[in-house]
Length: 135
Image (cartoon, rainbow, N blue to C red; front, side, top):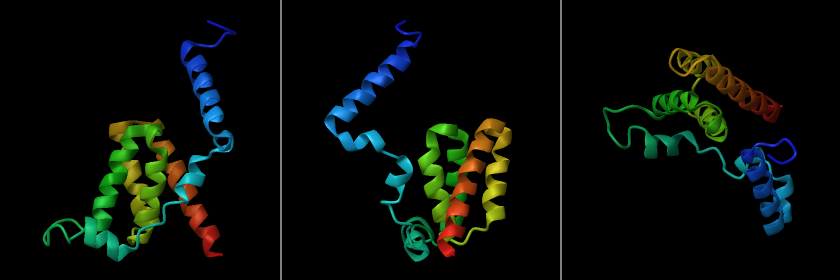
């Protein structure tokens, strides 16, 4: 190992240098900034594409998104962007903060406390951002 770094750390450092060489703007790239490029889909559009437009007797968009959030919570820290975007869409689809928190908390039994805690932190960030935008 070189300079006390693991092979993975060396590989990641090399990949970061390559990304900077290809595009200097990537040096300050932020996934949260990238997320802002994607607008929150309006509730009616979510219902048309993902809700009862598929099956009249099926799940509504809010329920589908709650299930999506449950699955993303189980993926842990590898799904940060998807969790934040799903929470934004859930709020737009009419989910309450309690419904979002309960969905994430329920996954602690399956995904573990660390995954649940990470998803709760991400959801709280989104909800705080939404409060700031409303002011």
